[in-house]
Structure formats: C-alpha cells, structure tokens
Image (cartoon, rainbow, N blue to C red; front, side):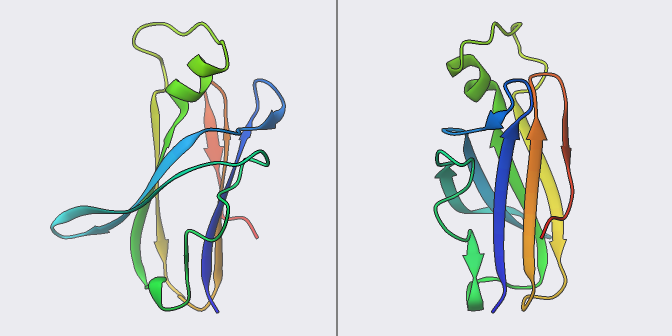
Length: 117
C-alpha cells in the first residue's frame, strides 16, 4: 500500500523540528487544493502518513513548511521579513503503490530536500 510521509530536521540546532507547522496541497490545472494541515511531533514527523492507500493518487503535490514561525518560536532573532518564511516543496507521485518520503533539512537561511526512503 502506498503512502506519503515527511520528516524535518532543524540543521541550525541539530535536532528534529518539533512543532513546525505544514500544509499538504494537491496541484492541478485549477490551482492548489489543501488536503491536510499538521504540526510535526517531537521526532520532527507527522503523527502518521500524510496520505495512504486510495487517498494517495498519482499527480502533483506541494508541501508548505512554516519555517519562519518555527525559528521565531525557537528564539532565533530573524530579520523582518525573514529570509525564509514558508518553504514550498513541489513533487510528483508517479506510483501510488510506492512509499514517498519527503524530508526537509532547514535552517533560517537554507534548506534542502530529496526523495527519502
């Protein structure tokens, strides 16, 4: 059964990004439809798959991570506006039977992502 998961690591502090908020969208020709809003747990992960089984369909998706509020809440002094506030990660699901894992490594000034396992 296919599923979509995510994990965020705070590279500034060397820890999971507990408490970071995010929203999952499905993209189509008409725009973006919000599917799920969530807050990451103590391990920097959603409490369960973002999508799984029949809910995981082939197509384009976007995860938007609210990194500016996360770092501000962590006590990091940020400029106004912050260099990174919301980090969007667009990706495609080609095989809805597969596991798609979207990790994010983030600091107030940089981020990277990849297809994880």
